[in-house]
Image 1 (cartoon, helix red, strand yellow):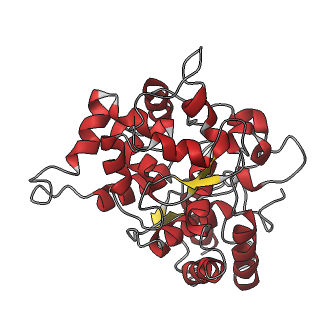
Image 2: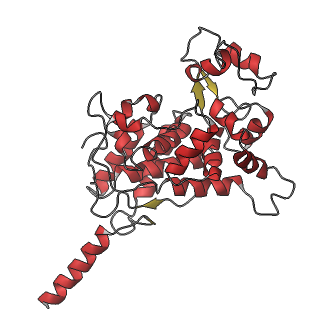
Image 3: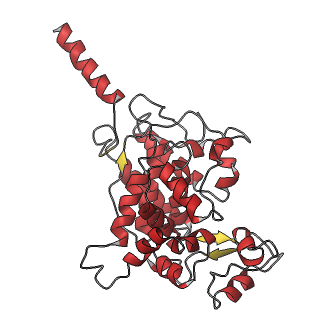
Length: 320
């Protein structure tokens, strides 16, 4: 009996050590984690209409540095990852801490901060009338946080070749690049990210010629040269409050606000992906932006995850 007991225990521990992400990972250990996180996101959204794009961006930035391990949440001084230049404007930390506190009260030491970030991002998409999708869980939290590790984040000024390379390095395709960039369908950006595109696109000055002539005066009026770089403007011209594919239509017609979005139409492969959602027969061919976005989010959520005995489960998301 003793031998059987140890065999069973060993098998159980071996299963944990080789754990993988799966839907319903906390089904027996913390069955109410998803409703709790969802309730927190809804409560915050009631007083902060901008929280959906903020939480979506937080998940993206977490996954692109060391994988989806919650490392961006750590606040252990000026060298913490969250203070990296590439993470400028990233927020939502207090929402994750609030959800974590409630989950800890219910299931102490069970649910990772990394999983809460992934769940909150999904709930944010749903709040913005985007597609719902099942989130794989079972991530563990990372034990390293350093701003130097965030030096290779995708940037709004990156060329399409650089963007494709950065996404490829994370196991993401050109199609993933397009649909994840289309998360810009909700949210705003700051004039800080527009200055070069509007006034110094060429060495001698000038604007990006890919900007539609009817959009350029509007952008310049919102972000005048030498003006307040902290002024914010919608990223999805004409549809910034709704999760839809209008951002892709804007890219096609020169109404992309961000340079990185505009560049998606300068590459043969990414342009074909953008156009695929507007073909006459697209609905009959089963081409769906919402479905592709959901699939890309699940795929992104798998980047370099820690599972099993790797990493840890933090009790407070901002501290090791």
